[in-house]
Length: 389
Image 1 (cartoon, rainbow, N blue to C red):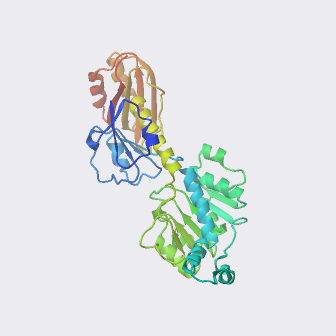
Image 2 (cartoon, rainbow, N blue to C red):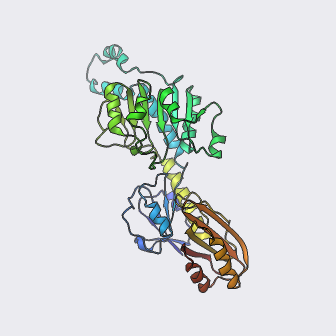
Image 3 (cartoon, rainbow, N blue to C red):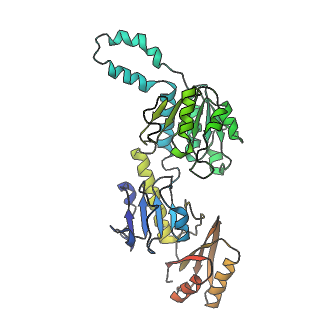
């Protein structure tokens, strides 16, 4: 029986993927797996029982991923599950920034009681007219699941699209419209584009990447969209750009005291991935990935461990999370051989400082074998997925 804890409400359509092998618990210390959306886990102390955390969404800044890796806890996310919802919000953001739709609606609301509102509208509407997005240059920083969808949609809307991503994956490249201009220097995005949208994770090298230096390279009247992470933009520099007239509009999905209510800022209450469909997709993906790890030991879409799969577990299987150092595989096989085990199948993958090894054997796994593996220097966690033949 596996036990799981939900730290946030998780869509029922996702939880329905749990079978009778799974039990929801109230105490996180009893859980083998945790499902989370926005709850802050950074200060939590985890029990030795915890094997996996699945984030129903893409961002994991609310989870101490490095500490989890050191403790042998695999952290999953669900990239792409909410991509369509965010893509649609980006398109909406371009439209409301280019044409002052919100200002126009607010004007109508404020003048709703005026009997001459129809005539007054014809005199006032030019103030809210704005510009079309067709024919404009859109720059996309980050061509992952969301960025690719935005690029393709923008092309269909008649925009000239530039994309920057030094780590463009093969899957993303295949999905990307051939009309998108892939640039290798982000400065080309800054200098050429009328609208710039950011779709990168919050890393040390991306925090505050849109700052005064970047803004200085942009065209006068640029529109900046940030529906990815608030800390990607230095918002004090953004406001300076708005006040100087360099930035026409800044659209963000992350309200705070810096931008909320400020002229030139359109602040959305974090709605990008909050559609019913996105939440359902994220919940389904998070549960399926967690189940595959708990039941088979497979790791897919982990942020702190390598991708490593060996199919459905049909033989006794032992998995080992360990440091990515030389000589580990030899030590594992020596322990197996000395104990009289014949290895039927084995796979090892690494990612940064960590590695993961899966081994199927042809006889039941003893507690002594587990203890011998745990003694190896650099081993973080040994888990028996299936014990007996």
